[in-house]
Image (cartoon, rainbow over all chains, first blue to last red; front, side, top):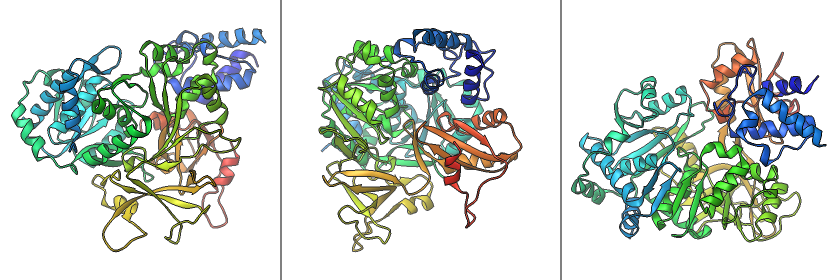
Length: 79
Length: 500
């Protein structure tokens, strides 16, 4: 399973009712609220063995699935 | 003696008319503007014939919403805040419970009022504040007010699926604010950063000390609570020195290593609610802010707000919960065992609260009021109502009160008090559901819904969104072939908890 697929699985578990493929304003459109983001990041850290920190937690990184996947891959390169 | 919250507002507005009382970054409301806006609202309500009755406040979180609260109190009535985040079905239950004749809305909620089951008079904030205030009229009402008159109703989760409306009055709020302010050292120089929504009692901690002392409260934009760096920068920019937040908001900052990039520069006082503060995160905060005071607070809505405190002025040992400490002055904790007698040293008992802070009870709900607001079990000579919290506690060897557990299925999740039974009642109301049960996964802070029935998770969550507030939605859904039962026929919750 690649990063994007695994990410989709985590997202769908978090909010089974959201169509993540087509959403392009997850944070700015309030699909995900603050506590969702915190939950999501905690799961991503565990699942991908990465460390997402305060500087990464900006809406730009979390508005689309591709954006989140990109952030994960960037952090995976750090390790 | 000042025994009416409006006296606090008047004294402060006379003394510091131009100082900012409440700000959300867009609107700054000074004390004199707060006073005049609420005078206009009060006057309008009285002239419309509104009297000693609940008034719905359906507005976006803003300084104006707080002005509406005080306007309602000035009319001798009590405010009932509802919010966009509440699903329509829950708002309808609230309307059904208090049967209000008046509702105050703003630009953002005006259109949506048509979707509510509300048939009364809809008043728009931006229009009503143009009304000329009739000071004599308001003065007459003020003079007749008693400190036992209600000032608001806030709704809290109820296990049968119907929320309970806790009614608080002038005296319970005045007593609470006096004790809380003494414990946390609020004064005119206090700059609050408010996190909690305005439709819970949690926001009393900022609103009422602000008008009492002439302090200032910033209503922090909700979106910042997922942007820790921007949040801390906001605290610094506004020179916020006092925060009373839910634990999850604090851990969000520490867990993402925000302190490596930026630190709060002005914070002197941090208070947190009755949730467990993970020790690792707590220590990160202490390390980052060694000169800041940290206080753990505990208390139920039914006793107005917080009732106990613990100043974290000693090291907390590994595995030790942060104590809830001791009651505020003028409040007593009774620890009562199952047989109705007082728990002895080191013994476990249910926490009962006694004092002026105990509210009159639940609105239009005699049965549930009588179950929780009961005669003091330790004396039977005269009528004295105390509040049964349902929380189990014990004193440690230092004499500090420790919270142990709940007597029932109530949980604390993201700062909200939730009856798992309420979620179950709503899930069961769906025809596709045969049986369901909720558990709480404390390690991952998730509400887990287990169900047997013919519905896919996506449709289920979509339907639940129409019934439950967002913070009550299950974080994980498990579809079971059959529900496990214990030998005596009850749902086996232990087994369910192991399934996570």
